[in-house]
Amino acid sequence: MEKIDVLYTANESFLDIMLASILSLIENCNIPNINLHIIAEGFSDETYKKISKVVEGEPGVKIDFYPFEDFNVSQFGIPDWRGTQVANARIFFQEFMKDKVSDIDNLLYLDSDTVVVGDLNNLGEYQESLIYGAKDLMKKRDLRYLNLPAYYNSGVLYINVNEWIENSCQDKLVENIEREKSKLLLPNQDLINITLFDKFDTLPVEYNIGPVEMIFSDLANRIYFDMSNRQVSAAEIKEAKEKPKIYHAYGYGSIKPWLNNESNPMNEDFMKYILQANPSYQRKDIENIFKILAFNPWLMKSTLFVKNLLPCGMERKLTDVKEKIFLKKNK
Image (cartoon, rainbow, N blue to C red):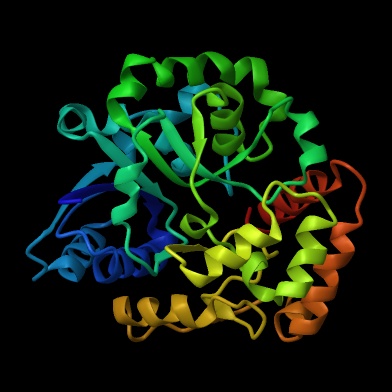
């Protein structure tokens, strides 16, 4: 591939995390021309300058900013995620990017909490479908809650822009919001899956590896993933870990690699780039019960196995409870 267009959505609170992702992309994707597109919520002038300085001196890197405030995402009534609508902005990339969309064939969307660790040239092979994503770790039996044949993680999406426009995907997503609102626990991710389920195709796991896939040995992975009949198999995970492309710090409770912990298997990979972006970055302490899990990897593994035994649908309900606690704490 000669070029790649990459979209991020972020606010000030995730600045250093997003910069780490950008630095890892530049260093590892092995594509000479990178066009960065950033939907930015509440960025100050200093923040814009900081981001521009990070990519300064990279001749193949171009960057365009799209202020989140330029388009009213909240008018459509999609539930917030973590108290903001910025994550939902990916659905409306056409509105933000406007005429720049016409110059893009394929758009790679990356959550800010990703780091690129491998060559991305093989993305050029994924041209047959409208949208590609890696399957979420959801148990197959839980698919019935959304009445879907498969469910994809929206943290890494590879979108055929022309097909997206020709199929009026944005309009279809908007039409589905009110009808499906009660199901939108993970707002943009659930909405994209429910609306575009027949347009999706599958990226290999190596394009979206989470910490749960990395923490276990091969034997433990076989027990955890195969015995619980999840969408992703232990064999797929083993193959992905041998040739990883993108790490994604999703899930895993509140134990994120940029926080003070000894449990997250992605700590080193993330902190390498976070410290490049901000050498004075200080990892904050984790509060509440997650602090115990943060410094006891064996206990974290045990907790994950206990969660594996939960009845159908319970993992999504726990996510709902955790989100409500987060919002109450951060009011």
